[in-house]
Amino acid sequence: MAEASTGQTGAGQTRRRGAALEDAILRAAVDELTESGYAGLTMDQVAKRAGTNKNALYRRWPNRLALAVAAYRRMTTTAEPPDTGSLRGDALELLRAANRHWSSPLGAILRDLMAAAGGASEFLAQLPEQSTDAVTATWLTVLGRAITRGEASPEALHPRVATTAIVLLRNEFVVRGVPTAPDEVLVEIVDEVYLPLLHGRGTG
Image (cartoon, rainbow, N blue to C red; front, side, top):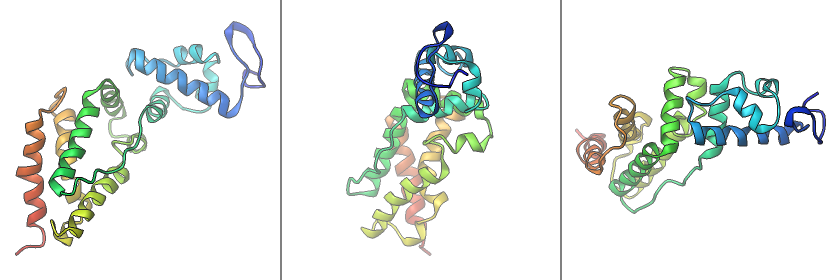
């Protein structure tokens, strides 16, 4: 069997099992995504680069989208929410960080994965930037600090309200297809939409 034990087998394949083999496959998938993007990713090429066979891939991931999502997760890091001392500053920092990421080569891979996933929520939920729980938690943290500082009313602490700014920025990339959003767009989202929305909650 191709996964039996350490050592060499035919056609340049290496006998491995468990975590060692999975790690090799994911590293190969990361390299393929980096070099060829999602459009150029194939199970054949990943298997060849990892020194294994396609069956080893399909036993772990049902298709190349599932494998690509797992590889993309390995390529990303999770940052702590900013704490600039003001709601406006925090919101702008979050938008600028997202804008830099979505405008980067890694962001191009993310957009391709989102397009390939379509409405498949089981895949989208695995993408750090698309996980509703992860994104909401970050923005609720920032908004919670603002409420503590007296910059917003507790009535503003609603998941849909908290994430309005990042949803608007995401639309620039996903709906409008922009390669990057100018900084003035980010400022406009915060100053003309997000802050007025938050300040309007709990009044009247």
